[in-house]
Picture 1: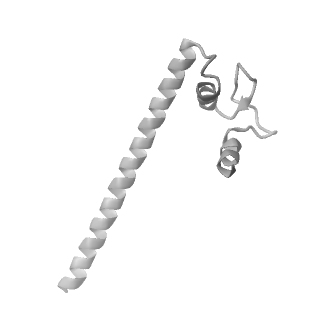
Picture 2: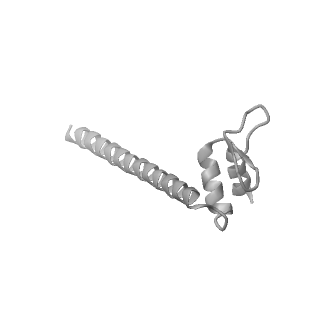
Picture 3: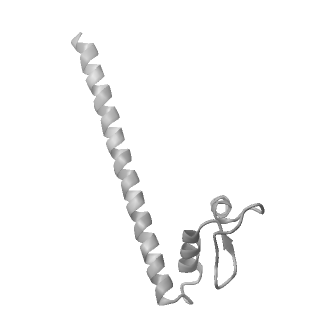
Length: 95
């Protein structure tokens, strides 16, 4: 699938780069340590330790917070742009 290939590019380490971490179960290299944590949580959930589960939960919570913050900022930006255009429209009609 095309999305799978796009995601793989983000995680795969180019030949000229040193991996930030590798999976202790399958040895796959990753560009960032957090990608290793997510990989273990998704692909090796039946084998992981309690510490790895805790790390996965913390990373997931951090990512959910970052996503919420992004959505909040996007919603506020849309509201402000809408308000600005409404205000300009009112000024033009007022004359």
